[in-house]
Length: 126
Image (cartoon, rainbow, N blue to C red; front, side, top):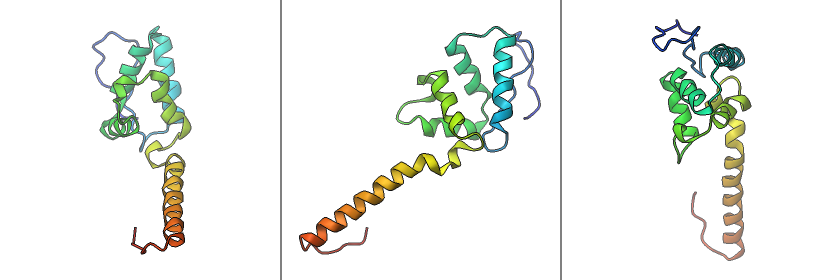
């Protein structure tokens, strides 16, 4: 975690900046939840805004990529947290998320190759 910024909003305690590629989510998540409890923050929109604001540039960019075609601001707090819950260390590097898409692509290529061979189509590199 990086140093705490000034706290002009009058909150008790600090919500530290979080980088999914540098910080441990298993430490940051309870700290964030404790910040919400301490400041009696129950509104999901406020939690979402504070969470997104706590991300560093790489973390916010990751959230943008994970929420395409929408935006992080259009997602619920629980949805955004779910991205990190599935991969506590670095969700953008977790190949388990990409695996179904990669397998789908590989299956499609194999199937198109099989159909091309059955129908005597010329073979083109893919």
